[in-house]
Amino acid sequence: MHPAFSVVFFTTATGAGYGLLALLGVLAGQGFVPPDFWLGLVGMGLALGLISAGLLSSAGHLGHPERAWRALSQWRSSWLSREGVASVATFVPAGLFAVGWVFLGRTDGWVAVAGLLAAVGAVATVCTTGMIYASLKPIAQWHRRFTLPGYLIFSAMSGSVLLNALLQAFALGSTIVLTGCVLLTLLGWGWKLATWRHNDRLEIPTNANTATGLAGGTVRSLEWPHTEENYLLKEMGFRIARKHKARLRQITQVLAFALPVLLLITAFALPWPYAAVLSALATSAQFAGMLVERWLFFAEAKHTVTLYYGR
Amino acid sequence: MTCLPANTDKKLGLVIDLDTCVGCQACVTACKEWNTGGHMAPLTDIDPYGGDADGVWFNRVHSYEHMTEMGGRTVNFPRSCLHCETPACVTVCPTGASYKRASDGIVLVDEDKCIGCKLCSWACPYGAREFDSDVGVMKKCTLCVDRIYNDNLAEEDRVPACVAACPTSARHFGDLGDPASAISQLVVERGGVDLMPELGYHPTNKYLPPRAHTPRAASVPAPRLEPVQAEGGFLGWVDRMLSH
Image 1 (cartoon, chains in turn purple, green):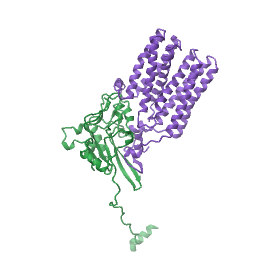
Image 2 (image 1 turned 60 degrees about the vertical axis):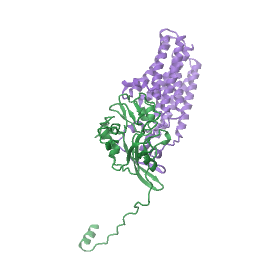
Image 3 (image 1 turned 120 degrees about the vertical axis):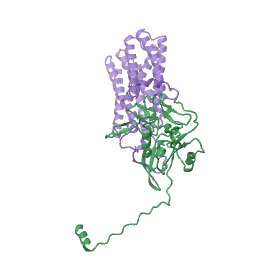
Image 4 (image 1 turned 90 degrees about the vertical axis):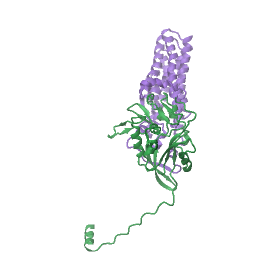
């Protein structure tokens, strides 16, 4: 599948944004994070900023962005529509929570309820994003049990690493949060390795024989219907060289998992502000690494239409 | 509505005979010609005379080599929308632009509602949908919905343009939901198959596999040519001189 930057950025940014929103909604609402003005402004600004930037980026790849409101209508059947509804609905409690925290200086009472609702909305939205991909049968690498948990784990992971950097920046870092994001990053690493291992050994029943209805023997493409690449090949016939794939997987592992874990563990031992600097570096490295991971998620996915082209 | 009808009154579709298709591309050009002025018009071409030609087509004919124990053969393979009974391209549509008609099962796109998110093209395993980057909406085969019910056309012309154009009658149109229809009978008689049945889309269109090889077909090549005797006389002398 063609790794369009708009969608790569969208899923990565909203993943981190919703992760942070969910954690802030729960932790601040329950009193684990103080209702500080600047912390609220920066924290909720980051979460809602990442989410909004991601959503705008995804709208940018539409043929008719001005009709995007129509996408809220078919939630009965479409995961993309459900994602639209969930993302818009989440803005309501998230907005109230932000207003309560930043402008009213409180995260208790109804603000805490709004925080919890925002967290529920965030998790629901990430689930719908994962299901958009997991529900697509023609793309075997996505139509797996690994896809939905992957989206949730990566969202929690990048959100927690971001939360840690935020708290560290305000000298509010805690070993619990640090431990949490190290564990989640390790979980993300393990999940990604397991997913790659699973996909590399994937055996699917769909092949050129079933695609053409020509039973038995081998079916080899003699001639395409067209001389140049068409929409199908540009959108779904993307191929990545094996050596690039291996290199990009290494880059993903270093940037998204290994380096953040190393930096965060070092942050345990160092006093403020060094721990804060390392936490910020861990966040940046992980975000870059997750962009590579998401690029690979698309680039490595093979659509059944490529069978018609002998690819 | 992108929810699918529980069942459709008719299941209009095509049956494509891979035995008789000669890959002449007549259906391709007839489809393009009709539909670029039809329901989904235009079928935009981008840089059509340049080195990077691209454009929207509803019907594309591939050529394959099918090698079996019986030997190899070339199979020409027209590929277009199969108007599936459970088309995921419809259910994934977030706007309701894609829909399956309850009356005849035809899968269509309402271009005025399409936001061009392309998800339907990802959901189609057959590559039946093509995005028109110029108009910004998704386009697909309409089963010539503007021909088959068109009272302005003579009755025999009320078939999809691809069917009307086929010189070898490799394309058949009819109601596949009616077991008594000629087209359903043809599928039974020739053992018509679904494409990628394992994905569970239940395509309406069927493909008739090529007939088995038959010993009746001429398989003896023309007799070998005898070696030419060396010629004598003047011409023989010229031949020998030139052959040096």
